[in-house]
Image 1 (cartoon, rainbow, N blue to C red):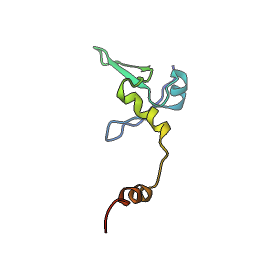
Image 2 (image 1 turned 90 degrees about the vertical axis):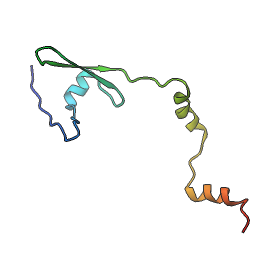
Image 3 (image 1 turned 180 degrees about the horizontal axis):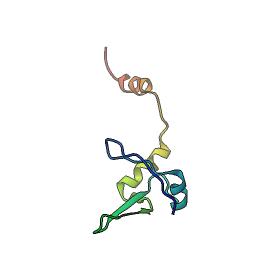
Length: 84
């Protein structure tokens, strides 16, 4: 078994070595499940990303219909009806 070491940041974050990510097929958005045994041993397994459901799922879908516009354009449109 090959040993690899990572550093824990002040916020408790760690980097997963690339070799482990490839071997476990870990991708962005996946969840890691941590299990600590009675003897203090720890196992980690990768879980598939959760698929959003309900209204939350629609947020990404709705983005396909809107065209991004600069703030100045939104403000111009909003101020068209204002009287001076």
